[in-house]
Amino acid sequence: MEWKDKYPRNTRPAYSELLEFLPPDVAELFVAFNAEMENKYKVYNKYQRYETTVGWAYGYCRNYRCELLCVTIGDGCF
Image 1 (cartoon, rainbow, N blue to C red):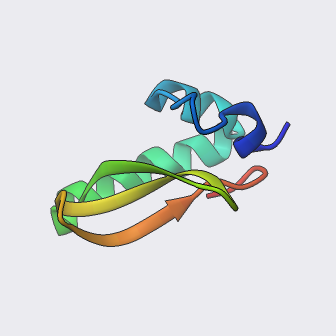
Image 2: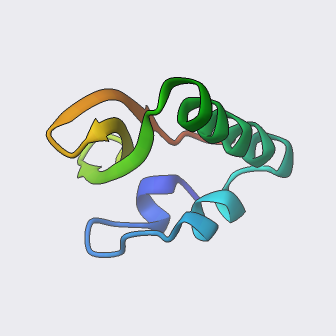
């Protein structure tokens, strides 16, 4: 099942559900990516939003008003 079909607009996935959706090795990479963004760049995964083409996307920012990077979820990837 695709990401946007499993979690439609009215069903915001929890962080644990995101990790469960990804294959285990990709989930590990995502956790490492998250940690690197936080520790090295002080950029946090704070802003979830729904995009009609890809489903739930994750914005990385230092505050809610300035998104620096957007991560989308695909079939076995991010």
